[in-house]
Figure 1 (tube, rainbow, N blue to C red):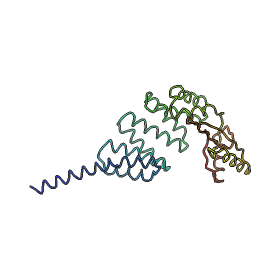
Figure 2: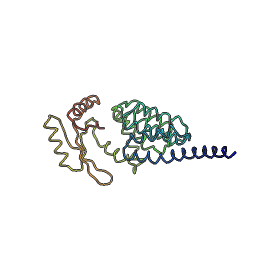
Figure 3: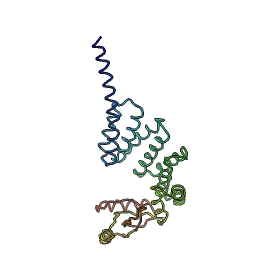
Figure 4: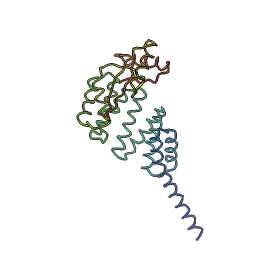
Length: 254
């Protein structure tokens, strides 16, 4: 009899210990993501997915696993993780957060039509989302890459009108002030002198480079160095490849 009670108590202890370890790991995952240690975040999330029987914990871990894979460039695996979260039927906020990350995954991979389709579907499904300003921004970003300038401007203006205090508002304002062309950004500096030195370097290698001055909501001024003014995304991608080979950190803008 005593042995039976002992084994029952041992089993209960193991269950509670496993549950506590899964719970304790979640803040560690969030900290790893904040510190951009995505390999660690992926490892911790994988442990929860393997060991936890709690549906809520598993769904949250699945989201962070997808986010880590997204940042590590494992786009297909990330998309699969986000789709599992979206299919979990947990909450609308959980669904919206995963769908936004799925949109970002398509965007980062250069699949702009898929990103736009996913963001539009999310907007249709959740028109009063807690993340509505982010949804607007994702739609506008994909529209810009697809040269759907008027549609992009509509959603950028919606951000300014409906969410003037949102993190997306200042970027939306800058994008609305930009001319309708593509460029390759190769640097962003608080020190104007560093930006001008980079421009001289670029011009020395035969590139058309210039500075765009932007202001943040907290009053900081950034000097963004860009190359080219192209009407085609394909041309911008070709220029990006050439600048990559020269060792510059590149980003197609907008």
